[in-house]
Length: 196
Image 1 (cartoon, one colour):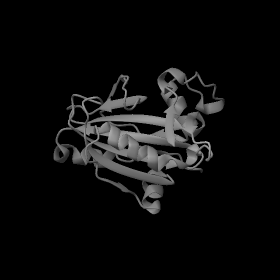
Image 2 (cartoon, one colour):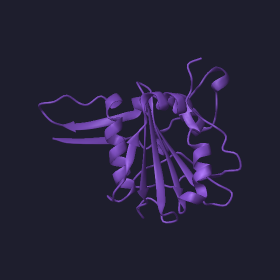
Image 3 (tube, helix red, strand yellow):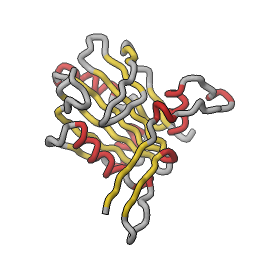
Image 4 (cartoon, helix red, strand yellow):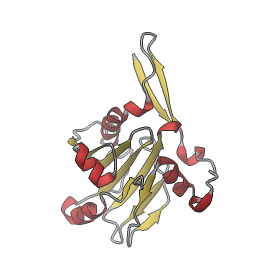
């Protein structure tokens, strides 16, 4: 049995979405956030970076702190764009809405180059309060050189909203104690919009 999840390359596949009314934007990343039901708080004093193609995790937006001790990368995956190739004649194709824990584990292992990645899921209450999400989890890892050569440590934060999207924030740094206040201040920068 083989399960391989293929995400469309969002950098190349994000069409110029036509959004009517006040949400209309020419910015593909803002359009992607809108499609995924997400919002990103303004990261004060952080400078935007051009996303770089990566074999482990393509991302659509990145910012770096003024002292360059912390970089944050954001990857957005609307569920309607997820394609699943499934090779099992005895089973049905998994629903993209149900594979988020598997994707989180797989990403954490990939970003660390297969090394130990301590992780934990947030309680449903915390996921809702912090991210307006149905599910959230975080993992710390030593950064694989295939993902980045500038930083040695990382924190992967994954959030999921049922029938909407999965989203990932990757915090990259060298000295956790030095950037801990910044991480704590921006942990919920990416979250789902409230219904009201």
